[in-house]
Figure (cartoon, rainbow, N blue to C red):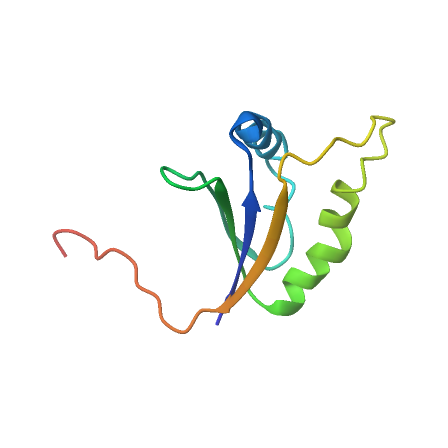
Length: 110
């Protein structure tokens, strides 16, 4: 089954908009990666400055290939001559999970 990677980002309140804009600007950069299945950026609602970046992959190998290829290139400041941007997050951690059960909504009227 799939693997889930959750990047846990500590984002100060004054950097939230910056972080969300950067994720919006990167649209498409992960979606075309081999083995990619899903992405969600989760904004905290109350009591925390922690954002969660949820991705699901066909396999650990697909995730590692993305990390060593497209993701690494994107985080090294792009080759377009633009200066590297200061991180919006003040800290991060990566959580890893294997999907052992899943469910989807049942079709209505079936």
